[in-house]
Image 1: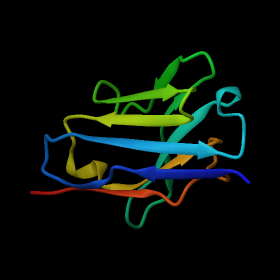
Image 2 (image 1 turned 180 degrees about the vertical axis):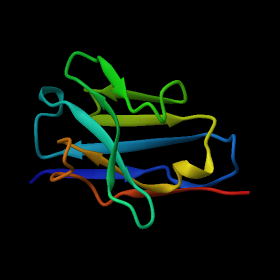
Image 3 (image 1 turned 90 degrees about the horizontal axis):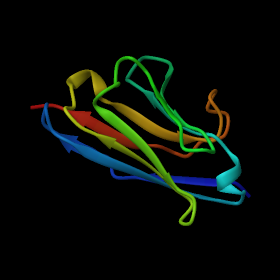
Length: 114
C-alpha cells in the first residue's frame, strides 16, 4: 500500500535551518507530482511547495526564497530544505501525493522558537 514517512523535524531558533525528508513506497514515485503541506496549530492544511515529475518546482509566497523542494527518484525520496525559519513556520509538515493531502504521511513537527 502507499506509504509516506516524513522525518527531520525538530525545534530550531528563528533564522535557523532544517531539512525534512520523506520516503515513499507502494507506488511509482517518479510518476507523481509530490507536495509538502503543513498545518499550524488551530489552522487548516496549507500548501507549501510542489515538484512535478520533470523537476519543476513551485512555492507558496510565504516560503519562496527560503525553502527548496527536491526529489530523488532513484531513492523514492522527497526533501524540503528550510532556511531562515520564522516562528510562523511552526507547523506539522506533511509529505503528500496530492494537493488536498488526501494521501499523506503522518507528518513531522517543526517548531521555530527562541
